[in-house]
Length: 95
Image (cartoon, rainbow, N blue to C red; front, side, top):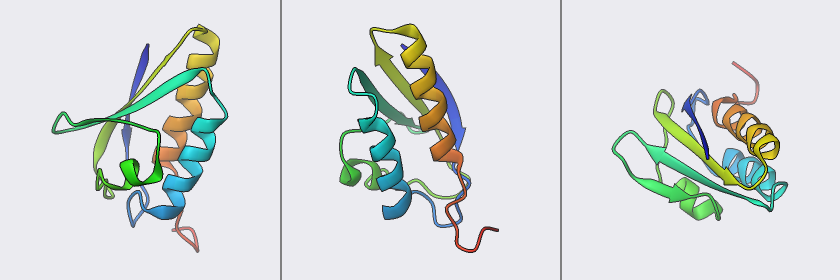
């Protein structure tokens, strides 16, 4: 299991577009399980867009992304990709 702290940078937080991109990336790693832990300790499995949106992550919020899998190198790659997406600016135009 690997974990990484992330800070939400998108001005509108994690809404439909970011959630969709994050879940598409999660689906690229079927042998891993993904979780998000909010600052208040709420842990949610990343298995649906609704579950992710319901966390209500806004710009500046911090969370922890956790990945569990059988292959250490796949876990590491998956964690980096998903963490980057949580910190990505999805604003159009980019700010």
